[in-house]
Image (cartoon, rainbow, N blue to C red; front, side, top):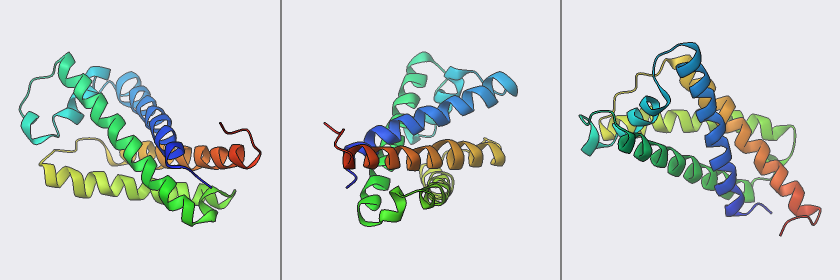
Amino acid sequence: MVRWIDGFYGGLIAGGTSALFYAVVAVAWLHDTTPAGFFARIAQGLPAFHTAPESFALAALGALVYAVLAAGFGIVYASLARRLPSMWQAPTSVLWGLFYGLLVWWAINDVLAPVSGAVVDLPLWEGLVGTVIFYGVVLSELTTLAHRRETTGLAP
């Protein structure tokens, strides 16, 4: 059985992994933004902060929003995995992770961003790789590990 808390922690860890990917690509490699600027852009997606200038407080709010979304999508994945054993069984878990990462990317870019009035300026390839591989697949494999840990009696 997969618990919701596994999805919560898995979502946070996968969110950290995808944020690290964005930091390496957008900040260190492409020099498109700064770490604070990346998270500030997320907070600027909220309607009340569309025109807010980049600041440390805005970056902190963006990091919080990023973590809440990552954890929320992780809980949804764990809830689905409770009903679909193939989501926590290798090798199908990788396929579910790819599919779920694509679904999360679509939900954020084609649903949440337009509804909030946010402007997505991330290159398509960067958003897809960061969300599908570094969030979706990481989340699916963390869920598989959590299930395996629970079935072997190592869970608290």
